[in-house]
Length: 154
Image 1 (cartoon, rainbow, N blue to C red):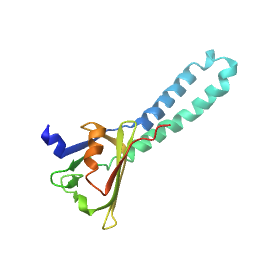
Image 2 (cartoon, one colour):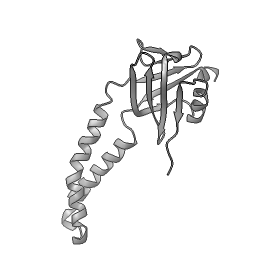
Image 3 (cartoon, rainbow, N blue to C red):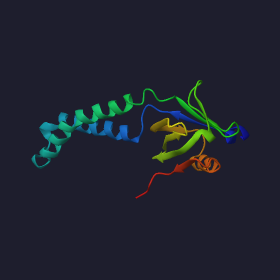
């Protein structure tokens, strides 16, 4: 357990909540198309809207997923060595981070970092954490340049 407190891994997933919703809308549109002959007349306009919008949503979901192909498969926050490792070759010390944000949205994490050199690393919420988010947030409190933001509840 002591090792978990020294390192936290964020693992990349091939989906996030937004892409799941877009795929579900596409499936609903397909169902609307397949049941068009038995659809009541008062629901035809809504069915046609779903049928037209479905291909757009599936293309949108694929585009979002494709845009993350260059994301690292794992981001490791090493609190003992005081650095963030994006890949075997890229490690950033905590003191190189001018401002950073780890944001949580529906249990998926995104990372945004601006380094002192001006370089930016921005990764959308396609990552999950290997420990509890609250525990990760408490570990990040000791890193003054990186803030943790929970999803905004309505």
